[in-house]
Image (cartoon, rainbow, N blue to C red; front, side):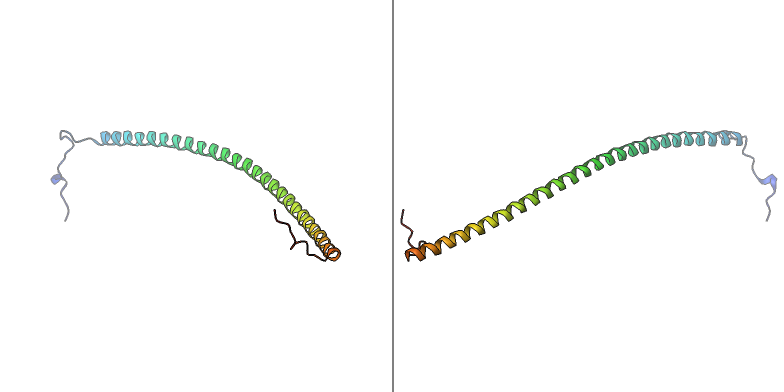
Length: 124
C-alpha cells in the first residue's frame, strides 16, 4: 500500500512549527552549549588533576622524610637496646662474681668459726 503524496498534509506553514533551518539552528545552539559546558568541566577536571598531582608530590616528600626519620629512630632504638644488653650482661657477671665471693667468704667464716653466719644474724 502506497500513500499518495497529495494525501500527506504539508505542515510547514502551520504556526509554531519550526522550519528545517530553525531546527538545525536550535540543535546547533544546544550542541554549542554542551561543548561549552564540557569545556568548563574539562578545565575543572584538569585543575583538579593538577591539584591532586601536587598533593601527591607533597605527601610523597613528607612520606620520604618520615621514612628517614623512622629509620633513624630504629637505629637509635637498636643502639639503645644493644647498650642495655651490654649493661645487663656486665651486671649479671658482676652479680655472679659477688655471689661467688660471698659464698667463698661464707664458707671461710663457717670453717673458721664453726657457725653459719646466715643463721646467726643478730636482731635489730
